[in-house]
Length: 546
Image 1 (spheres, one colour):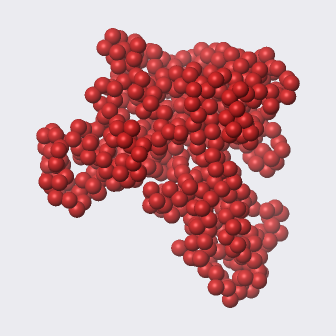
Image 2: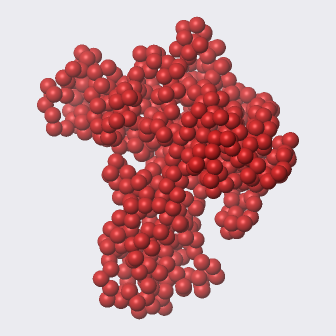
Image 3: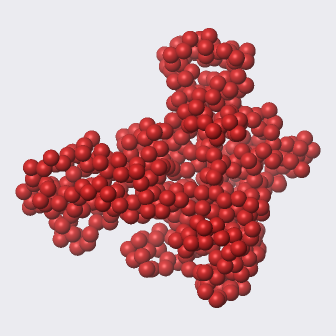
């Protein structure tokens, strides 16, 4: 039975229990589901070619044996089989493959197989997200077959492209523009056409990356108030939307402000995913008049969690993956020693306030086992009186420190920066890179750079040249970096040029090298203090901003 048929056949309480009942599971009940599904997956995975490539002749039969025998894995462990799509080596037959950026320039893409059982679980959990996104209290939600969703998603083979395909099986929600047309359009064309259709029929759902939703929201405001005649704007628009538009314009004139999306559209479902959502949350809420609900999904993990009506944190679904967590002190130790194998704890062992790197084993014939997906969460609490549950909830923090992800678009690593520097042939002697935020709370990549000593004095190299040249090679190596500028209008690179000898002085003074990726703010301050010291060298003071 399709979900829209259940809307007519079942009560709201029955539907809520089917899709959102996981929220009121006890810790023991949640772990019982986790353990049962993991034991099924252990048998499938251990007997597969991809499993044996890691287990090397071992066959775990219990969960403890599985955690002891299987080391923590990364995509490099699976790449030979997955990139060549060796289906015979997988735990179960895939129905389709999805992809995402792996490591720009060094490894362009990652691919991941999805079985039918995985897609069925994904579909069920997406419906759970829709129900919770439209809810205002436990047991109450507002979903209709007459609803419309603005298409702000990356199409297949990206994981967000699964959403319209899966929803099509369950409910006749109309996408603006229609998916078959949208996938052939440019990003700007989709925005423009989606807005036009929204003005004709209304708009109830909006979902995408937080950064993209912010850009689209700004575009809607400019399209609704910029350089076309009133006749052109309202051409083909429904009488209801015409009246709403005229009343909104009158209200905006009275309040002396620009037209906002909330003046035209009354959303009942507003969901966002990706990194840096906290940077856009307040602005999105202001523009739409509704607090967006965060979901967590990815190419390798599938859809694994979402917030509820209270927006207090993400709850994980028990049937998508088996969850392990690397505590912060173990993560720090593994950063200092790449050969160290950090210890993990389970979902029912996390503590409020704890910061953890997520480790996943994908259920239902998935390829990934004890997989370091590269995302860090904070446990915001265990149990919620307002939501009537006793399970942990989480807040997404960021990617692991080895990766700089800007607005959900980039996967900048030490390797990709090194390659960009080598290709540019710029005389850079030392550098460190950190993800930082503007006064407007927008993320960017900040590189602290020291030139080779022979090129520092009387050099024609300027901050502008460094930024332009490195930007060219970042865009060449990483299409997603290029999209930041082309789609979102963001130039994510800023450079501070340090005096010659700064890094050497830092190492002498503090007894260790500064971390090349995402050093602590106190370490960056110490580096800048070394830069300001007279003993660094005879170069000019070149600390400068673009």
